[in-house]
Length: 194
Image (cartoon, rainbow, N blue to C red):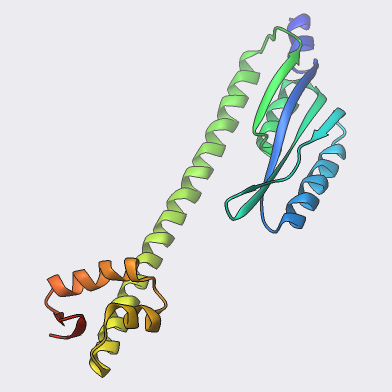
């Protein structure tokens, strides 16, 4: 039992991990990753042995930079806590080669994991509900904007696009829906109220 405790809770664990920051502007990403690593260095239950920063890369409208860390962490509990707290992209345990975990350690890990998963699930559901609400209202606003514009005068799709600020291709979906609902009609290339 004493050996198991030494290997699990009190073992020094050497690992490699990758932590990535994604965002914009470029300068913010550069500064944010350095500040994040400085924050990690303040943790007394781990020691960073080596840090290797990547070059910053553009990924679409965002910028990405990662750092590979080699570190020593005190115990499996702290290792698990590190993963939850700092959210590394990947983690590879280098030493020790084998672990022995007690039932309470495994139970605590699984309960922490479940609590985090439930928390993330609740956030995702809340965000989905908010997105659905915003989408519904945005559609209603655009629907009404088209009808108000056409009440004033006959307009083509390009003019409607310019007035509403919505790209022609995307606006066409709304216009087609209004045509099917017989709320508007099309004469040549001009739309008007039905």
